[in-house]
Picture 1 (tube, rainbow, N blue to C red):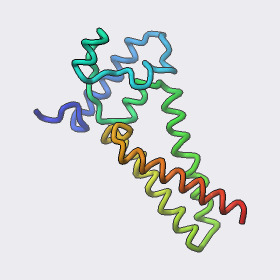
Picture 2: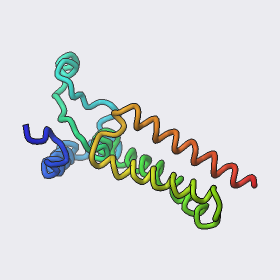
Picture 3: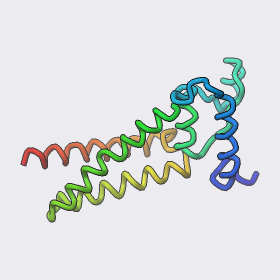
Picture 4: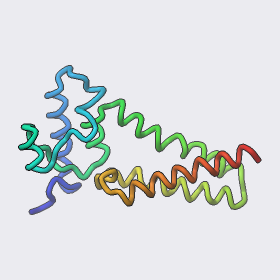
Length: 147
């Protein structure tokens, strides 16, 4: 099978998003369908009598379908807020803290960009790594404020 709803079929992703927008037709497009409500396994879909959803390897599109525009906005904020503060710290500091801030910015941005190519929040290891990076960012910023 040539790319089972993978990045190679990005045109199908765009078509799916357009179909979803038509299906909503005024039914809470800001909130989406509900986080985790898209069932991609046939046994669960049959058990709950819902249509089988496509497997998406684009976390941003999946989040848009599940949580709507508000959820994607919150997810963007989760990435952009620490990155902006870390960039400011990196510009102001020339020592080790500045280089740590640069590394955290690169890692967090790489994760956000990587979410375009796979369903990142579906993999525990990378999701845990993201939250460890966010926690380390918060701690570095807090220590820097106290100094």
